[in-house]
Amino acid sequence: MATNIGMMDGAYFVGRSEILAWINSTLHLSLSKVEEACSGAVHCQLMDAAHPGMVPMHKVNFDAKSEYEMIQNYKVLQDVFNKLKITKHIEVNKLIKGRPLDNLEFMQWMKRYCDSVNAGLVHSYNPLERREASKGGKEATKKGAQSQASSKGAAAAPKAQSSHNARRNDANAVNSANQSGKSSRPSSSGGPAVPAYDEQITELKLSVDSLEKERDFYFAKLRDIEILCQSPEIENLAVVGAIKKILYATDDDASVVAEAQAMVSQNTKEIDLLSPIPEVSEERTSLENPKRKSIVNIDFDAAGISTLSPRQRISDAADVHGSGSPLMTY
Picture 1 (cartoon, rainbow, N blue to C red):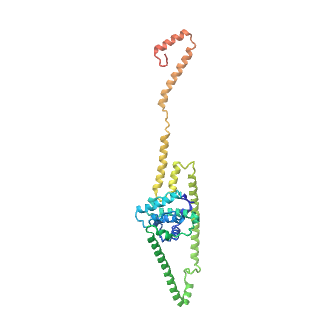
Picture 2 (picture 1 turned 60 degrees about the vertical axis):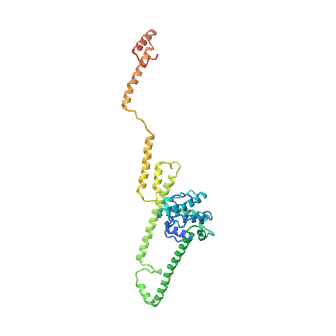
Picture 3 (picture 1 turned 90 degrees about the vertical axis):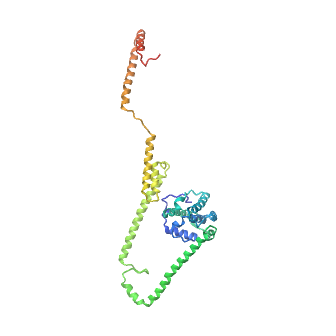
């Protein structure tokens, strides 16, 4: 199951219209915007559709308006995730604000997960009946039914208008046939297009193909970078963390780059503090050199004394003792 997918996965490239069509067809709702599901009730019922009976629908509130009520819905969703051992993190504080991008990304993940359960097929699931047990579920069902009825009425109106226009056109069939040959605009009934439009369509297709190739190229590059950053050898480095912060940023905000640079600079300062290498100054070296020379001279004198007679050694030792040399032991 797709419990933990990367930000570069194909699931996050599904459009809003496809997400809305999936939600409305699965739950028999009539959402017009993805952010309308920010209360968390829709997410709970989607999980109930994927795992029938797993979600306590009597705890779900479809009429949640305040942040406190929305948080209660997400608590129900989190309990379901824990039961199913799903490790997906729910960013409740962002979702309840109703921002389109945050809600779209989470709903894209929901679609990917539900599609991975039983190949996305929902057997013998009655969303209307399950929703009646929740608070505000009946009102949500009524709104969905009214919007569907209004959409059907709006679709029927153009049909009636078109039939009326067809009757009027039957009376002027000869004139319309003569004028259609003189018209320079393309026919709405699928007739041949003007050569100028053909050229524009061809240019647009070529432009779209070029943009898709460029998109796939850069997407592959980003995916390679993501895989490299997940390597166990380097994933804990500060530079890799900064790259991930930029790579996974959802908002086009310049502060993300500044934060990433701050992470790298802070790590550099910590490395400098952890590895102090004291350097020996030239003055200290110059002071130590005479001491070393004096020690060498004393050793040389001691070697010369060893060649003297015992009486001469005693007399010389007495002289050294009288001089108070720090190298003399008692």
